[in-house]
Length: 317
Image (cartoon, rainbow, N blue to C red; front, side, top):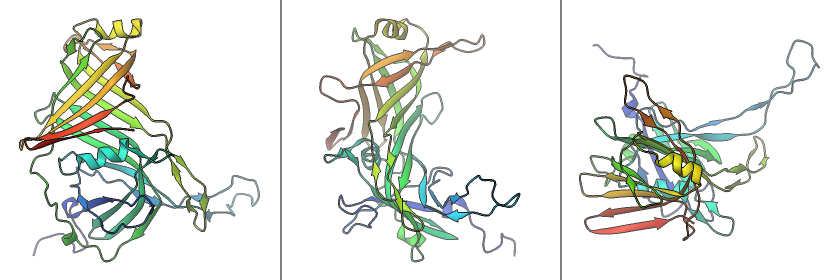
């Protein structure tokens, strides 16, 4: 009978789900909880636990290394996913929303199933969030990537593929509809071809303790928001904004066939660079590099999800 060995499996046999932890239980599975099952996009789950060794570079021992000690546990890696209405707000909240006097990020508990190994990741915090969209392809791609840092990793021998239901997940994710830059004179530049928006939360790792050492805390710092846009080079707008020091704004819209609309807005932007590309055989484009700051309402980034039945809007503290 043809077929692969019994210990082989395909990538579609792997599953991922995540839930928000309680505010007073960093690294603990909350109860009650709501799981969000996220289809793995390509090979898009790269979160892993490692235990780097302490190997001092000293001359003791000649050519033979004498010291290699397990010192600490690190859990980190990227989740890259298509964005569905079911969990868009959850992932945006992970990367953008702060809470409490320390401006803490929310933490998350995730489970990963593969036929050969199933894992729990505890106390995940979003170190960096990236939104990427490209309207020049047939499928108008839109992906979200989150770089996580976590408290601990543990094997979960009871987890099974039947624990993943993808309940409430639409057949089609959000699709990139359009994006626009607004100039100081209220002119909207709508010929945006693609963009990449990165939010860096500058998370500082607390001390490691125990054997192996585990993180005592993760402290989110001041966030930096950078936007790179590619658009047709047919006007003077970005050069003027860079030279005059005037503010720009940005808005991107994503849609779903079922009627949902996701909008992400950067209300105030500085333009630092505007390099152009103009090869003879291609359209001339400009790729301005922009940095977000707060506007008069103290917002640096906002998002909203709307459907035919209602609207939910969030600003980010």
